[in-house]
Image 1 (spheres, rainbow, N blue to C red):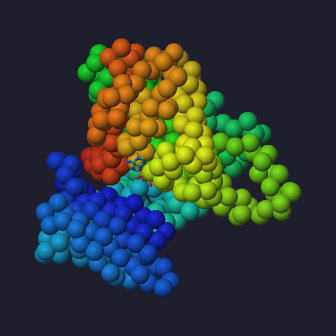
Image 2 (cartoon, rainbow, N blue to C red; image 1 turned 120 degrees about the vertical axis):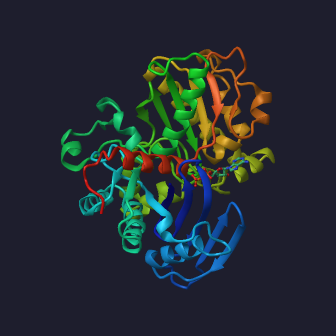
Length: 411
Ligand code: ADP
C-alpha cells in the first residue's frame, strides 16, 4: 500500500510517499515558508521517475500547503499517483507523546486532544505537528491518519533513569521527567544493528547497544535486548549532548545566575540554550559540523575547542551507558554527523580501547552508507548505519493499521 509520511513544522512540511511493500520512495519533498509574511513560499518536489522540480507558491496555511502537495503528487508529469485516493494511510511524525503514547496510534478526536495537551511539554513542535494532521483530516476524510511519536521508543526506560532528583510531586503533578526524543531514528538503526549482531552470533535478548544520533540535534540511547534503558535527551531536547545550537547538559544554577545577575527573561534563556549555544556558541562560527571541522583543520582555536567538546561529551556518554548496561556489544553512529564525519567517529572512539572499542581507521575513513568500521580484534562492533525515519514511520503506520491495536477507531 502507499503511505504518505508527513513531518509538519510550524512553517514547513516535509513529505514522502512510500510504497510500503517495496519500501520504495515514490515521491518526496518539502513545502517551505508556509504562512510566513512576505511570501517566498516554495515546494521542492522530487520523484524517482522524473527527478526534481521547484514550484514557487505562497501558502497561507498548512491546508493550502497540503493541497499544493497533493496537486504535485497527482500531477501527470511530476506526480507519482493518479489520485489522492491511492494513498491508503498517512503517518505523522509527532514529537511529544508524553507518558500516554508508548506506541503509534490511529488518530481520532480524543487522540487529537491528547496530542494538543502534550503541547505544554513541546510548545514548538506539537502544535506544528497538529497543523499537518488537521490539514490531512480535512483534505482526505476517511483515510487513516496515524501518529508516530518521537518519545515512544524510550517508554521502556526504568524510573531511576527518567526521574529527575526534584521533589517527586513535580513528576506526578506536572509530568516533569525525562522522555527522550529521536526515538524513531534510534529504533530504526537499533533494529538494523540487532540484525547484524545476530548474524555475528550475539543473542538479541542479551544484546547491549549504544546508538548515537548525531545531526543538528544529537542524542544517544542505551538499548538492552532491543529495549531502551536510558537516553540523553530529557523532558525537552535540550539535555545531553552538545548540538548545533543547543548546549546539552549544563549546571542548572548557571541559568539562575543569568536570570538573577543579568535579569535574563525565560524567553532569553530559552533562546540562549536552544539557539545560540552548542557548536555555534563555542566556535562563534557556525552550527554546521562541516564548517567547524574545516575551520578547526585550518587552525581556528575555538572551532577546535567546539569539536573537542562535542566529541568528549559523546565519549563520556558511551562510558556512562556501558556502565549502565554492564557491558557493550555495539556502538552505532547515525545522523548527518554520525554518518559522514570520520573525524568525529575517530575522536569519539580514541581512548575507549579499554572498553573493547577498537576503530579501524582505514575502514572508518572509507565508510560510505552502511558500514562496519571496527578492527577484527574489536570486542565491540562499531557500525555506521544511515537512519531513515520516514521508512520507520511508514512501517509503524502499516503495523498499527494491521494489528488494529488502538481500539480508538478510525476517523
Ligand atoms: P537534522 O538533525 O536536521 O536532520 P542532519 O542529520 O542532516 O540534521 O545533520 C546535519 C549535520 O550533519 C550538520 O552539522 C552537518 O554539518 C553534518 N554533516 C553533514 N555532512 C557532513 C560531512 N560530510 N562531514 C561532517 N559533517 C557533516
